[in-house]
Amino acid sequence: MMNESVIATAVSRGILSADQAGALNRLAAELGGDGPPAAQRTPDDEALRLITGFADIFVTLGLGLFLVAVTFFGSRLGEAVGLSKAVAWPLLTVVTWLLAEFFTRRRRMALPSIVLLAVFVGATFLALLHAFAALTGDAGIAAGNYLDFVNGYPMVASVAALATSVAAFLHYLRFRVPITVAAGVVALAFALFAGLLAAAPGLIRPHLTALIFVLGLAIFVLAMRFDMSDKARVTRRTDVAFWLHLAAAPMIVHPLFAGIGADFEQVSFGQAVAVLGAFLALGVVAVIIDRRAILVSGLAYAGLVCETLLKNAGASDLTIPATLLVLGAFILLLSAGWQPLRRLFLRGLPLSLTLRLPNPVT
Image 1: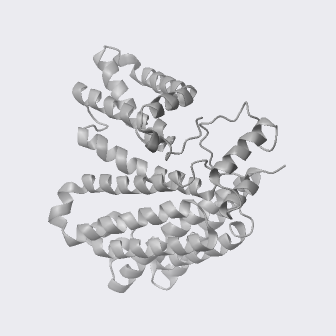
Image 2: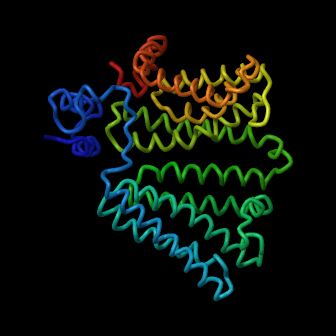
Image 3: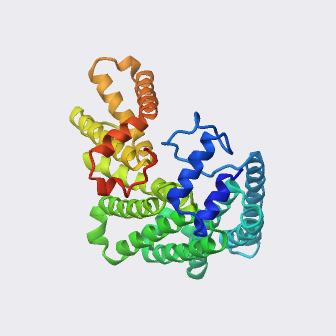
């Protein structure tokens, strides 16, 4: 019986269209083929290829221990030659690439590949910062004051982030790990952010939140392009879209609620109502595009709203458990009614737009 990986490969090679692949997956489920039976597989499943088996967890544990040790001994080696961590991060970059040659390119292990990519990108960026510090003798970066370094040298941070995005692109060409696209795009967004900050600090600093919001929207649009190119969600493009949505969500949500005036210290009743309205609007968007990342990013603010409203109602002694109860009930009810709600919202949209959306709801 054909499994989903075979069908996905057929789509990527042009043997099947995305719609035909989706129909085959549904038919296999109805006939009791590979994967969960039809009764367990719902149209609103947001599938994610994260763990292919317990071996993924076992290998990831080993990678974590091994990479921590590599970082430690690399730091000791750097200190011995007077370069501090300027040796550890380049060493970690090389080691993660070599490990990916086996665990990603040959074994195709999902979770270890994600971990190796994340470490590779982070180590590349830090290696470049430490290389600049080694050339200039800057002591702050050697002590780990990365935020101060970025504030003091935004153009250096921009160039380092741009080079990191290029490294992520090369990594994707070699290994095709879906999260790599999101990592590269985030690095590119940070390069633009730091570059603008360096070029016009007086103009950009008062509008940092708005700039982050715009960059988040740009990543969201890119995620939708990947989503709409694989409406049946059977190819690697849907995994790329998932990670892009995950990257864009906090960049959209936090500036949005910050613009309303919400923070985690104090919020007025009027602000609480505004946050609640924005959260519900994000929920509608999440249901329409069938992606939950943007809704999850707003949960902390929704909890803040619940706490404020409960205190105003005189239930100050029960704010934490009552807030957890409300949020939990909301998530469970939304999950249970996701498919009917999506049908309802899609009926209210123009047909031309509905047909372009990822639309597993029939």
